[in-house]
Length: 283
Image (cartoon, rainbow, N blue to C red; front, top):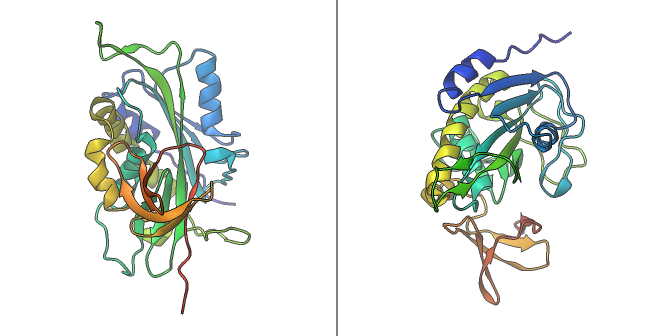
C-alpha cells in the first residue's frame, strides 16, 4: 500500500492568500477533471479564487479535447481558478508555461547536458529536451468564463470586464510507459531525482499567481524573451495541422507562433491548429 501524499495546503494558502483575498485550497482524491469541476462551479456562480488539486483524474482534458489521465503520485494535476482582467488575453498559456518551467528548473542546463532542459512547445506543452530526445513533460489548458466576475482594474470608462479564468496544469511526476504514444513521456524525476507531486505543487503555484497578476497588468510582451530561452520549436521545421509547413522563428509579442513558409512569414494564432516539429532525417 502506497504512502498517502501530504499536500502543503496550509503553506500554499499562506503564500497566496495575501495576493488573492478569499483564496482557498481543496484537494480531492478523485475527480473527472479539475478544469471541468471549476468550470461547473463557475457556471453555478462560484467565482472565488481557488486551487483545486486532484490525486487522480478520470477524464482529464488537454487542448483540442485530448485526454489526460493521471493516477495518485505518478502525476500532478491541478487547476487554479480566479477572476482576471487583462487588457489583452493573447499569449496567456505561453506565459503560464514560462512560469511553470522556471519554477521547476530556474537555471537551464547546457544543451545536451546530463540533466534534460525543461522547454516549452507552442502553445501549451512543457517538453524535456536533451540527450534523450524530445519528451513531453506536461500540458496546460486555459479556459475562461465571461459572466459575473468583478470589474477591474477599477471604476471609470477604462475599466476592463473580468472573466473567471481556470488554468489547468498536468505534469508527469514519475517515469511513465510510452507504449502507443507519438512522443515518449518525460517526468519531473528525470529533471530532479526524488521530486514528488506535493513539493512540485508548492514550487509552482505561488509564482504562477504572481505571474498571472503581472500578465493582467502588462500582457505577454515582457515574457516573450523568457519564452524564447525555452522555445523548443525555434529554428525547427514544423508542420501545421492544416497542411502548411515551414520553419519556426519564435513567437511575437502577442504570443503568435511565427512560421516562415513558402508564402512568407505566417503568424499562427488559431486555437484549432496544432503544430508538430518535423522529425529530423538521417543521411
